[in-house]
Image (tube, rainbow, N blue to C red; front, side, top):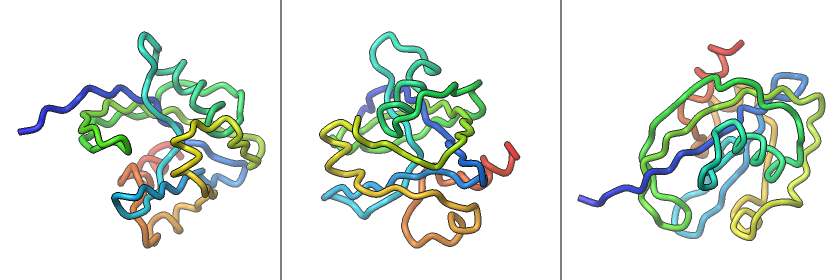
Length: 145
């Protein structure tokens, strides 16, 4: 059995004024493309809320309040760097006044695998042909509506 690294992570449920949710498309070389909410692992010693603010700026170019944590999931997966992890993901609901996104602060890895992003309706998520994470995103959004 492979041991899994602990990976605390802050994720953002970013909604535009029309209630569309932002997702990034990941295109890793070793698995099929998938879509995911903005966010990522905490830096050492970083709090979840602080990581959410940092990730929102780094991935979306937005400097707005992330508000309170609204959901939590614990999931197992293998990172893009091929590390098996047990991720403790905390979700923050953010309502943006615009749908403009600035990806100029992406890391080298993000620049390589996150080349597309789009705002999704809940109906689009339900019928999308590629994997979307979290898998229960539609239900999460409905509970918050």
